[in-house]
Image (cartoon, rainbow, N blue to C red):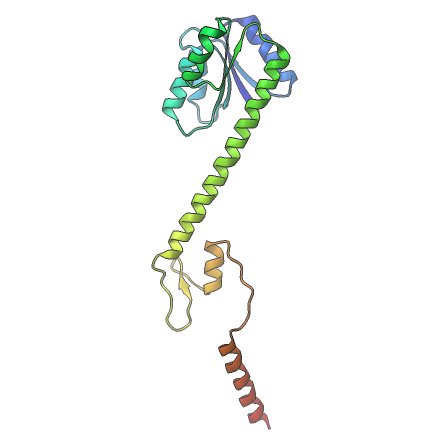
Amino acid sequence: MNILIADDDAPSRMMLQSFLTKWGYSVTAVCDGEEAWKILCEPEHPHILILDWIMPGIEGPEIVQRLREREPEQLYYAIIITSRSIKDSAATALDRGADDFVGKPFDNAELRARLAVGCRIYGLQNMLSAQLQKLEETLAQVKMLEGIIPICMYCKKIRDDHNSWNQLEQYISDHSEAQFSHGMCPKCAEEQREIIKGLKAQLK
């Protein structure tokens, strides 16, 4: 898990980076809000953020607010850290879109636990997002099957999007999760028995 740290205080930033690396995280660390925003505008960027409140350029809460406005459906977990009064600042940070708030000086064990919670929540959100996407794809396939499908009136083959003709069961298998257990309806079974009887009679 890659985590973005943005803190203009060098000792705090280096200490955070050291702790997170020790705890097994990959870390990208920057010294101001402008650098943090540039990284967050790149295609591949961290989604777990530890942002100092007061930084040159763009402050932590503003970064979070920009992210929420730019990508309301994108998954982020943002922790704001600050030496300001927790009573005055926590509600403001959360209102701006932050997920958690930690006051300085922070307790290492508490920060580690809060970060673990953030990673779990982000992981669950990712899983739910993937399941939702899969559900939407399945519904799209169902809607396609509900539409007009070209089918041969003689052999009952179906024409696909590439203008190829496929057996009915093959087409349905390719476009849904349906599985077939091949059998024979009573009418067809009776017809096959009559055909076999006729063949046997011819052989006598």
